[in-house]
Amino acid sequence: QVQLVESGGGLVQPGGSLTLSCAASGSIASFNFMGWYRQKPGKQRELVARISSRGNIIYGDSVEGRFTVSRDNPKNAVSLQMNSLRPEDTAVYYCNLRQLVHDYWGQGALVAVSS
Image 1 (cartoon, rainbow, N blue to C red):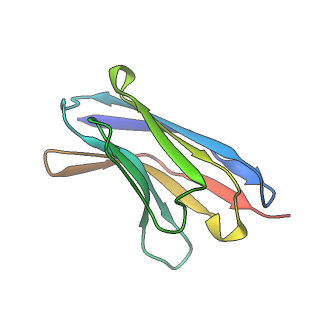
Image 2 (image 1 turned 180 degrees about the vertical axis):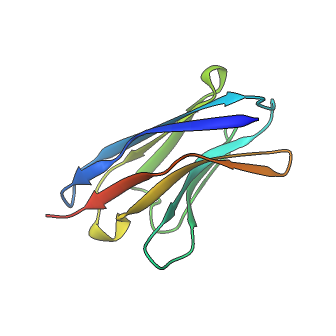
């Protein structure tokens, strides 16, 4: 079993910054993907950013250039630095670990961007 624990999130003004962090524990494969998805009210969950254990990164189109994903392999941890936040970034953000065709999810963290 795999557990993901998120931290961070909250309320921020437009143009501000926030950092989300996530730590995984349990049976972690040597090769995996860790990253972040978000879900807005009434919308499907969408990819924000994902990084493999080898360092390959993918960003969602709407966040590239503003968000930065990084990971600490020995700690099985992933972070998301979010800059230049916009009201449309408001969503619940979920940490994700994908390994051996299984997806594991964190509990979700609300990020609200509003003045």
